[in-house]
Image 1 (cartoon, rainbow over the protein chains, first blue to last red):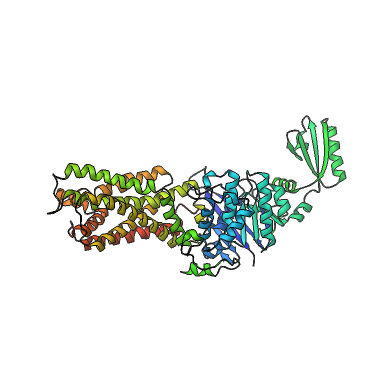
Image 2: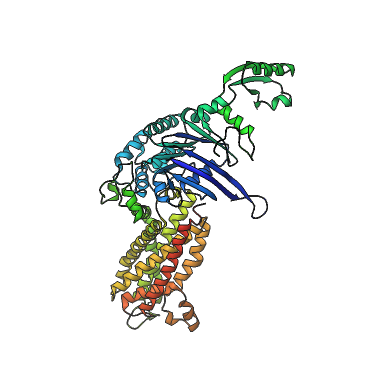
Length: 316
Length: 279
């Protein structure tokens, strides 16, 4: 039984612009499963539908069509059991100003009917570096500390399935390390993890499998290693002085003076270098590196359009 | 309740244990009791604002109106104006604070975004309803008792039928707690909630006979007063003190019961459908 199953999930919202009654499709027939014990990454640019998909999973939003289950429990028809099995770290940095950290955790634990939970709460506080903040009011905490409390609140009822919606957005390196060590430990102990993040190096390091969303559609769904293999194996990075001709620029990712060409072999690299030389562009620096998930992500996003998936999409 | 049975059987956590009597001791009996406790704790943590302030306001009303009208207004035979006024002020404070509890808690949670902590839980719409309305009843009764304890020293006041007084106090607080739930769900900003409070709750409370017997009004306004459910709550509550009232306490009980069922039913329906809280 999959830990999470999305089955033909679609969701339309009223369009913010355009004629009255117009809608836009935030999710378009999204289907994939996440198996028990997986560390799964959900990637996509802003507005791709990641948070909508997670909101439907968490019961914060209803799907227009389709079905979502958590360990076999439908998130609408059997919401109580589905939510007990799920721990969600929301993207927004929210807190209840009336309570201190320990009170907030005890209350969240109580909502799930979990009693006498102080031993686990103490472990969470310790593991997330919050032990000395247990009696601090939520208002007194820094942004990073509030983010840690959000993680602790999501885990306080020991859910077998953990959903992290951009948990490291805007937090320092120390928290990221602490958090990932702790989440990786939970994953080793059998918890399923669904992660959305904009830090692609995190997804590459942690996730065994990855789905990429673009404009509400799944455009890639593969094991991380397969995604990396399927993409161009190398990246030619040039630091140039001048402008590339348009036909050459169209084949590259240009960030200021840095130009990156995806390349599969030495001949392709040579041909790019030759084209740049022919164009009379001065090259200040050359670097050839292995492609990483960021390159794969950019490849997939640029090679797909709003109406269709890429070659790597499966089951969507 | 099915949900609570499922909680006991939650697999994998190994966290089920004996019920701890004090919530602060580390455990709660069930999800809705936690929410109820949290809502009571919320207003208690700011009790200077949520309890002491309305008690002071009621005392000021008593001092001003009692002093000005004591020798000019006679309500029912043998009952001084100050004695007549006290149950009205108790009930008015009780109703307004029961409304404020659920409505302000919900709107604050919505605007600050922390309602998500509740939306992610397995709590059912009934759990939400009983926890929010239950805590509103507690706040209403705490404020009402506070007003009574402070004002009772100003005159001789007996309680002729305490069960009637308790029944109307609890039902009135539950009705306004339910109404507060509806307003809190409906309002998207503090302005809208303030409008509901100032243009609906406040006029209906003030025009319900808190400060006067409706028998002192012209026929037309007496008729209008009979359309105001707040009138029956206050009149029935006052019957508990004096054994006399403008209308039969049974009629008041019937009307308040129907209003509670209607408003409570609407609140439960809105919670069930996730009105303005689930997309």
